[in-house]
Length: 133
Image (cartoon, rainbow, N blue to C red):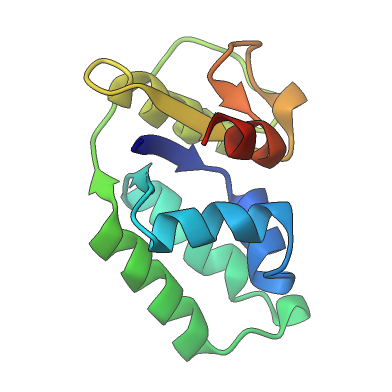
């Protein structure tokens, strides 16, 4: 089967820091073509900004290669602003892109912070996404 997923930054960071992990398995499925990542420029910029933080000790080349691969393998879409409150305003875009993508594809939102989003069957943890695959 083939899946579409908006991948929250916390999953990306966890995978990049420990590849042999559940988040790492999610990105392996992306690179194997089983999961198509769905994003917009704001999400890609957040990946770049967060992964470039000195505390993660990732080189600029590694960060750019990763984001470039996501761009190449994924699907960029635009989404309307939704009238919902989020405890962290940066989470809004991940939900908006998921909702827009769901208009044409069954799309999941994969996050390690499931409580930050409205309770929906398509908002899943990395483990739950792997169980779907």
